[in-house]
Image (tube, rainbow over all chains, first blue to last red; front, side):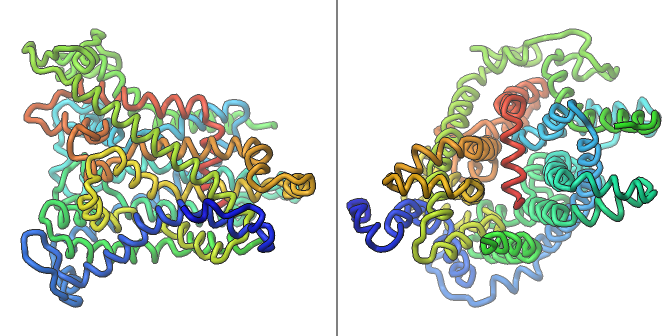
Length: 302
Length: 288
């Protein structure tokens, strides 16, 4: 609290606002330092030790935790599941999000209300989303089976989560339902920044709708699209709630984060879980590098 | 705008599809929450419930619950407790995050101090690392500080997770304001703090609103953080309580849907009434 008594005059004399600036940023620095950066350091530190509440001492074990991760079949299958979620989610969210954004952009006064409806799934608690879909997917009374039976697509009720691939896809659908609005909103903002004159000029030159989209729209929303795709990737990478609520800890649909949670809080292998979370973090950082670089570019722009 | 009939039909079809995809699952949950248990498990399919009932909401909010004709223990004590917990932790996290971001964002945008841009870069970079990476050491830390299952502990974890986005948002809001105003105030002899409170903050209102809405929605929807840090009803929020209705030995689908529908109300109100701020926050926060 010594900084609090720093006289304002001295801050002015020191040629700037260094004192006041530090004072205002200090709570944030302290909070983030103690609750994010310090635990981050601890994660690295503990991941090369054996930290296990059931066993005495925390000896240094080097990379043993990391090495045993690679031969752990649970880790392998949860990594596989995570990759499936990421690929399916990014492809569908991008295609669907761009389509939704184009549609929204062409609307007049109705846009505001349609946009509110589109945003809604994103704004709801993911747990509630998952429960809504859990009931839809219910093998005995779910509306999915009901509709497909009524349409004659299937002749008897399916237990969707008995099959790994249908389980993975149905969980991906719930995640996509929640995250597609993000892509739509980001791309819509990109579309709105395109000057209308470009389209008029192209129309005069006789360019069709498809070539206008390919030559003008797509290149000019490239930046927004890159951000949206990075977001989709990171968010799908961190999928937890949907898979957990819809199918619990089942190995068929378990994600890397569920695996981290299981290792640490169910099996109480703290350091093993931390080694895994370090790997997940680096993988997530690698895919979101574009995101960070863009943020930095923006920071140094002025 | 002149559009050909085919185009306008395509557009109408597209909008219908988009609305159905976004709203149908929610409407189905509302429909199920108003359907009698016997109709919920009927094999005949119908869009509207054959008979409307409020019994699931009664079970949730009443003093006694009934399930399959049997009077069971009321879930209202747990439900109301979890509702309060959700409201308290989300509101506290929102207030603290917005105040910290409003002050800190200004410092990072306009005041010069050593290491400013490096610190800001580091804080924003945490957006790209999964919050769960730090959860295990954070949990052990909270255990040793006796902050697990306390409002303070949960709120602090929320703030540390949601602050970077709010800070980024507020900083870009401040940078978008004309600096001439602040210079004029400085010439008039107003100090930095006075300028911030009397001139800058009122203009940053929409930005503050966006930051508050984003933070509240994320806090309201949190699942994994309270799953770890809120083991008992002392702080357990709705998002952790509601799935427990599912994993009981019987599954009361009507109750589950009714609880979900009630948990939807706060986000629904925000989206309907404060949509404008939400959109601006979403696009700014995603690196405009």
